[in-house]
Length: 465
Image (cartoon, rainbow, N blue to C red):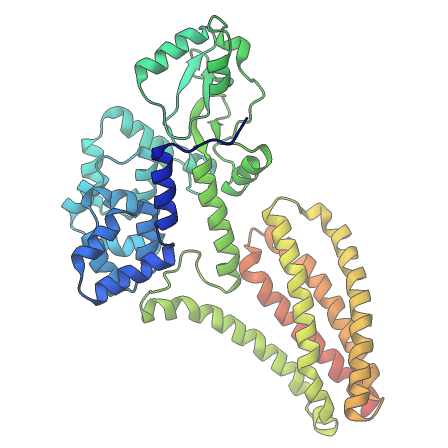
């Protein structure tokens, strides 16, 4: 086949995508319009953006400008934009909205989107929404709210299309034409029995290409992946990645079809997991507002800083025990940061590797022994190499060989410590149901600093004083 010539519609779409400025450019243009007082121009820019893009723009603005932009958004998009916002920014905006505005914004929202918002809504607005819903929607919302938001039950949408196995494909096709539309991202229909028990799936491609007289039961896939509502969000994302899924059914322990999860929900989970690893490692909340005011930001960070201060003081106490040695051999004070830094970096590499393996489901407690010996072997080789290099540098720098064996031995011991703590720290924390992304770094720093200083100064005390 030759190359496909784009139609005029495709050409227009291509021209629009090429001519449309990148998101940072649109943000700069919007800020410039606000600076110039060009409110109408800013309003026109907002009309051409998707709700997700508007949400990202709002999160990229200081609080004062955020409120101005929020007032310029088409009220019909308020609910869609609120769903896309991070928890903290959304909660702040909701607090400033009148109950009538909130009721109007959430009136026609999808049930699964409303479930994401309802915890942030005032009680009066929630009651009004429930009162205005029909019985079926109330039951669907209740079904979603039964489950925590970080599991399959909380992620699922109850908007599904199910068919019976004992009907012909032609009947299903007529039913779909009569229905008129399908839920977004529908790539398969769910096959159930008369009691709504899940039997399997039939893809839309099979529905369209198979003989219309074929029965649904003859074309369904009984081995199609099914997810229990208790499955964690991380496991759900792993299933979607492994199976290349667009959608998957959520089925309870009795086999009853509860709803479905679609790829857009999983993409959000993956993005949140990535953000969690970055933010938790620094002791911050996943969705902390970068433009949050001073007092709340200080309150959130001071605990983490206090913990780090305590661990740093432990290292200081170790050094104090060897104060006399440091006074007699000043070179050891110069070399202490080298030992601590090398141990910290080596341990961070190991911790990062283990936490990534835990997040991807590649590492479990039973792998601890093998991983520990592997990292000990790596630390032995890298420690020896670094010890030789640092020893040679020390001899050239200080003009004496006496300190070189001590700094070399301290380096080997500290890299060994980093390997042990780097493997066992995250695994033990996970076994205790503590998030290793938050705590493993503090534990690692404490051990490598204290043991590194104690080894260097202890050996210095024995052999140099």
